[in-house]
Structure formats: C-alpha cells, structure tokens
Amino acid sequence: MDFLQRFSFPGLPIRGQWIRLDKTLSAMSNYEAYPQGVKILLGEMFAAVTMVADNLKFSGAVSLQSQGDGALARSLAECRDQQYLRGIAHLTEDEARLQPAGTLADWLGNGQLALSLLPDKSTRMNPYQGLVEIDPAGLATSLERYFEYSEQLQTRLHFASIDGTTTGLLLQRLPDAPDATEATVAAAQDDWLTLTTLAASVTHHELASLAPQQMLLRLFNEYPCELYNPRKLSFRCTCSTEKSDQTLLVLGRDDLLALASEQPEIHVDCEFCGHRYAYDQQAIDNLLKRNSSALH
Ligand SMILES: [Zn+2]
Image (cartoon, rainbow, N blue to C red; front, side, top):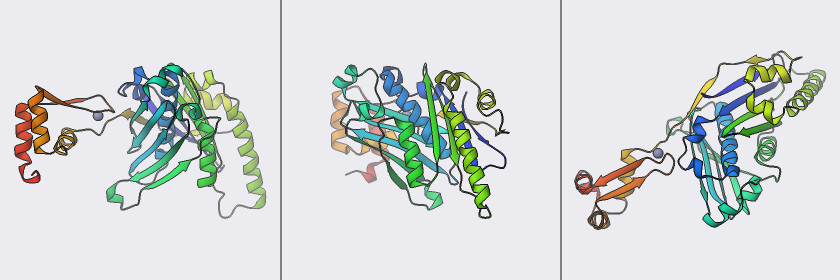
C-alpha cells in the first residue's frame, strides 16, 4: 500500500513527513518504458506534490510540471484531494536512448520546473503557480530552496528510489510561536540543526527499506516523536467517457464523419492511464445525435 505519514516532535516547531510509493508509479501508462532516471525523477516528483498537498487547508490539486529542451521534453506529477495521483513523462525519442541516467538538470536541459496549486472551483480561491529554480544537485535541493525563499520555511528533503519504489523524508521548521523568547527560538534552532543533521545521516538503503516507525527510532532516538495515522495514496486518472467525447466533438461534425469513414473504429487513448475509449460508426452517430445542437 502506498501511503504518507506525518510526524512531529512534541514541543518543537518542527514537523515531518514520510512517504512511500510504488503501486502508484507502476500504474502510470508507459511507466515500464521510461528510462531509469525518468522513473526515479517521476517518483520524486510524486512524493513532493503529495507532501505539499498533505499540508493544504483546501481541496484541490497540486502539481509539478517540467518542460525543457533536454531528453525529457515535458513531465507532470499531480496529487488531487491529497490522495489521488497521476502523472506522465514525454521524452524526445532519440535522446532518450542516449541517457540511461542523469540528474534533473541533465534531463531537462534548458528548462523550467513549476509548482502549481489548483484549488477546486468551490473554494473560490485563485490558482497559484511558482517557478522552482533548478539546482544541479537535483529535485530535493531545488525544492528545499523553493520552500526557503518562497515560503520562508527551512526544509530538508531526502529521497531514495530502489526497484521502482520511492521513499521520501521531509523535515520543516515551522514559524516560532508569537510568545517565543529569544532563548526558546535559539533552542528550537539548535534542535533543528541536530534533527536535520541526524536526518541527513540516513542511508539510501535505510530510507528505502525501513518502515517509518523504525526509521524515526533509528534516526531520532533521543527525541520523542509522534507518528500520525497513515494517509492512503493511489493512482487515479480523471479521464472519462464524457471527456473523451468532448475531445472528438472538438474536431467538428464533418471531420469526425470523415475520420469515421476511413477506419472501423476511432480511438481516444488516455495518455495518463492508457485507457482506450473506442468509437465505432454507430457510437459516432449517437455522439453526433446527442450533441447536434452544439455542432454546426
Ligand atoms: Zn486516464
């Protein structure tokens, strides 16, 4: 089961999140065909958007999107309602074979990474998008900087990906209480330095293999730590027959009929989950009939 767990250190303005994903990743269409470096990158992107979504106080989606002139032309990882994930990578075909591994910067080339918050319409909140400066050290460091500069939150992020499983660990220094004194702020900052140093000592193998409780005990055994209930995560696509119908209707009646006459079935394939929506001649006729008033 894929899940995220929050934890805290009672009395300290420091929070943490732990996440492990595997089924969610392999449920992506074309996942098996992606190069190893892209599988790892998508795993980290999924972990990151889920951690951000977990802290939201409103319903909606969080996404990380990249585009660039490198082998990875575009990528997207999205978390909706704090638990449903979907994502995709588009590779430029020739270069994909040349680069079996690589960092975020290698894959993107000259590119951009953006973090978006998309509140549901019912919230009446505006969407937000921020650019994440790409650090040569990778996605974790890029996001640490982003949180520090855009949200004034000191953050430490560690990822480990082994055999199609991605595990993430995040520590974040929360703002001090309004009644905090100079002494308590200094003490909290000392604890932050100790905890982040301990977290940085986690090995790739430990992070990827230990259960959250064991890992917290191993890393922070001198600090009382509270682990909260797990939040289940799963792959879920938002494609539907209605959306697929709309994709075809955009073509217009004449082009759609022409297309239908050329082949026994028209297919609309979802690029996220691989689901195929198939339309035979009868289905096309019905679709046009149902939508006759909207079409010319
Ligand atoms: Zn789909």
